[in-house]
Length: 121
Image (tube, rainbow, N blue to C red):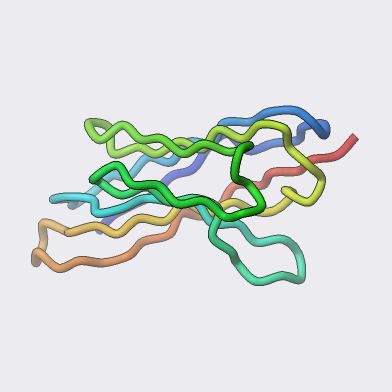
C-alpha cells in the first residue's frame, strides 16, 4: 500500500503565504505524477496544480502566478507554495499521486487525507 501524508495547512490572513507538503511512502516503485486538489464547502473538488516526474507542471487559472508546485523525487515529496492568498482559496487541500506499486507493478492513484487552509482576517 501507499500512504500520502499532507502537512502545512492552517489559518492565514489575506495576502499571506503557506507552504503545503505531501510525502508519499509505502510500496512505491515509481511515481508518475503528484499534485494538489482542493474542495471548498458545497463545491466539487478541483485541480490546483500538478507536476509530472518529467518536470511538467499544470495550474488552475485561479492560482497561476500565485501558487508554485515543486518536488523532491528522492524524498517522494511534493510541495505547494501558496502566495498572495485570498479568502476564496479557503478549502481542504488534498494531495494526489499516480504510483506504480512494487506489489504487483500496477499503476494506481492515491489520495491523502487532506489539510485545511483557511484564509481570513
